[in-house]
Image 1 (cartoon, helix red, strand yellow):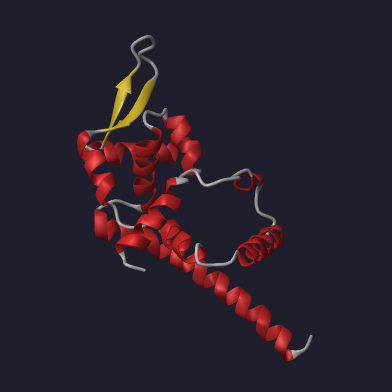
Image 2 (cartoon, rainbow, N blue to C red):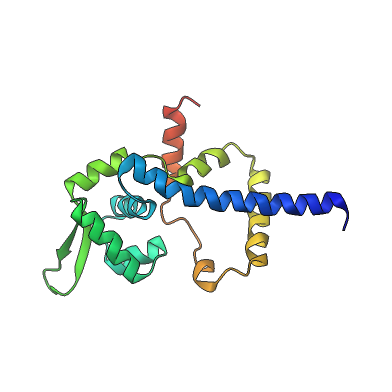
Length: 173
């Protein structure tokens, strides 16, 4: 393999490492700015957009296990941001809802890493976006992404597109 090709491959791997690091650093940043972890922030955003949800539905939308969602919900409930509302017909079933404090918190949350990414992507041409999407799909194929992740076919928070546009306008960009 020639030196340029080796350098290009090393650059791709290094870029991937930087991406993974950026995602891992996002949660502590969110925690510092809002007092919530990344998954807690996303749970609030999903509940604000979707309304009342079961913990199983929220678990699927966040792509976390049922045991993880229980911890996320417990911490949000302790902070007074989410409440479990028992069903009237079947008291064994509860729905998750934002409290008034949760609704206020949702309005003041800092930008997510997804929102920042969308802000950058909206400026790309349609051709660039299509090419990037195709290359990223190949990248995932190379990594043999597990079926549980491959089943994710869309953003669970399409409002991120709106969020990105609003930030763009508020930043004067």
